[in-house]
Image (tube, rainbow, N blue to C red; front, side, top):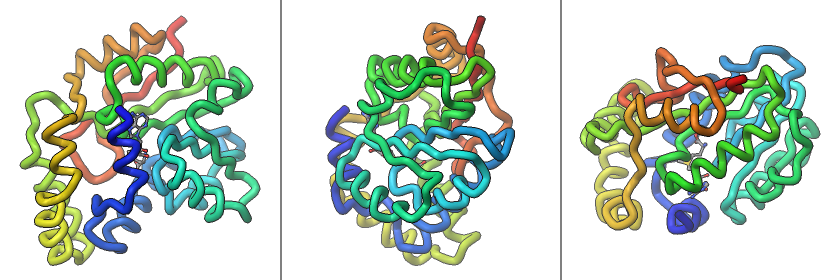
Length: 231
Ligand SMILES: C[S@@+](CC[C@H](N)C(=O)[O-])C[C@H]1O[C@@H](n2cnc3c(N)ncnc32)[C@H](O)[C@@H]1O
């Protein structure tokens, strides 16, 4: 859904403050690092967004490929991480011509909800081609069909309370309610999957997957799946 890529390429207000943004990316980096099995692993972050804490992920692996569809975000990634030679920035299209069987761990966090089911199948196929036979795909932050926006608000407020940005989070919620995000969420919507639907989708894409005990990031009402090549 191109509308969402344009949204993430705009000066959006998805993060309530700089502290919220920093805390978010710190948590994502910490959780990605938890999935890295070896210090020389090749890691692919599929639709990584601003990836502000990617230097930490890079320090924990051999090579980090940051793939991002939004051109403006990608430009900032290239500038931000130019000094870190372990980090490569790519568009999603460029992943199609990447060497096959070259990646140990692929992470797609908080992305599937913005894709049509067909786009997600396309993304899984691209990832499957570049994953090494023993490689792992981690798909995080999947919205369940029965869980509404109230839980997103509760998860944000909990995170804000813990890290001391509750006031900014409240203002952020007001801003979000009046923003393009709310309009897009109403008009275009977010794609949701039950546990069984996501397992079936991953199986159809050639992965044997299971539900992880905890979600990546701060929202415990969303799901993370860990998938491997099914032979
Ligand atoms: C919520 S951000 C997640 C960024 C990062 N993975 C994280 O966990 O913070 C959503 C990301 O999905 C990307 N995106 C939006 N629509 C997309 C689509 N249709 N196909 C692929 N990526 C998309 C955006 O460019 C953005 O980087």
